[in-house]
Image 1 (tube, rainbow, N blue to C red):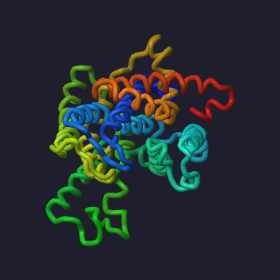
Image 2: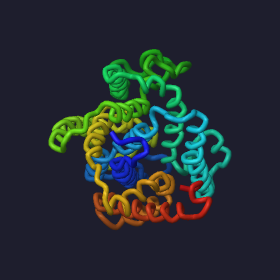
Image 3: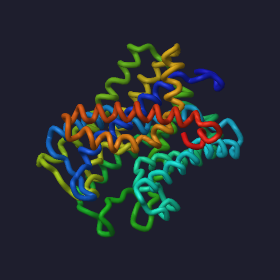
Image 4: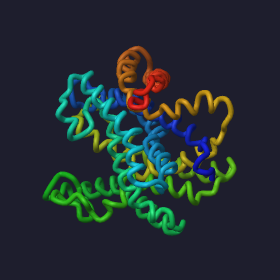
Length: 366
């Protein structure tokens, strides 16, 4: 493992790849959520469904990979809690606030809602409050993380992997018994309308990816390419099958239209904290960890884009939305998804890199 003061090169490659994966997913969403009326889920054909599914299978690990990157670098916290929070405030919260305001202003949205949540106009910004929640518990768990054994950590990861099956268990509850008498959501293990904190609440969700980042940094042996692929490939195949099969075969009637809320049911297998995505993420991290390649390409291209990736994430919907609207009517579905992702990635990279060069205020923007 590299010393803390050294650059962790593979994480630069990982951030760049994960950033492109995010934009690929968002480039597929207009086909998936692109109905003519507001709040409609609409998929025009099985062809569209195929390419949405392929994109999800290949790229859904993107957000978990970002969480694992933060954990790998920051957890356990090795500085005073106050200093840790001040650094995160400047690096994460301030740019988030700037771009949240920008999205509301551009869309003429409701300013008052910013006091309660991320803006609807920038739906992708949901990621930042989630990440801040993990930052809040990192100092709390750091003393444990410093002394945890590999066996103990694997035990907690096993419990977390169990919770990634819960989206499927909720569906099974509904299929076997119908909606519970006290609500439409199938509640599990102590959850109910007056208590959202069930048995596994505190060991579920994105905290598992935080623990995975810790495990890879402290305990995971770095193997050669052949052994890495041999271990990662079965995990990735299993993950892709769990992600793709339920999603692709959700409906056989096209064009498929339903209220937007119906998308929650469709997304069972592609939820970020579901089993298939977890397995695909572990496999992806194993492989990307081998990309410890420095040199000119890394220093001149990969590292600058990696350092600008957070800003790219924040601003990219300003680019992606108009590009997607322009390309979708003109070219085939797979080309439209790929071209939208490529153009959005390149334009967002240029914009973020230029914004970061603005004296004094650049760091507050990207």
